[in-house]
Length: 248
Image 1 (tube, rainbow, N blue to C red):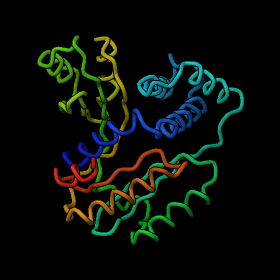
Image 2: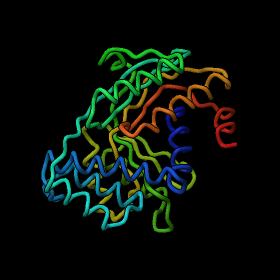
Image 3: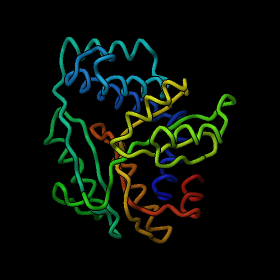
Image 4: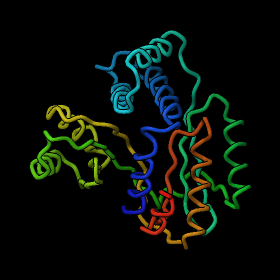
């Protein structure tokens, strides 16, 4: 999982403190809207809403913003629909995109334009299903109250498949089936969770020279900047050299 993890680590360091914060808030608000539409405004009876609120708190979204988003979605409803795109960037790098949109034609046009401009190709729905596996990914900030060895044993006992030390935070991986069980265990342990989500983890990675890889990562960032895009997954291997070049 190293390529995915390094890219996630870079985004984690960049995304919490810079101008992308408003983008993060916008995505969380959309997730809240869809969650309320599907399961109602009470988080005690709506697991998807409870998860969205948890992630909002992890991103330091003000409480009044969270309540406003819930109330607005409850009163006005939501016409957002979930759509996905699958395709290949130059060099055979697979890209899987998740969107929430109120205008499917606009979203399709925008995503296709980026692929065409960057020399990629959009595929049919399901064409990348063999390359990505859905797993739970939970980010936990390090703190003095967490004993590393005890914490690792506890999350593994709860059903986690793996725990990685990423400097100032831990990343926990679970199967899709055990995602809720591990989240519940962390709640009972009173461990602060910064973000928890089901993500698409690649089963295989594509290695490219540094210059080509950086072009692909710029393409991925352009896709992420689209207002309708919620998540972008890829199978580009991020070497230490590429990681260093990205942080310059």
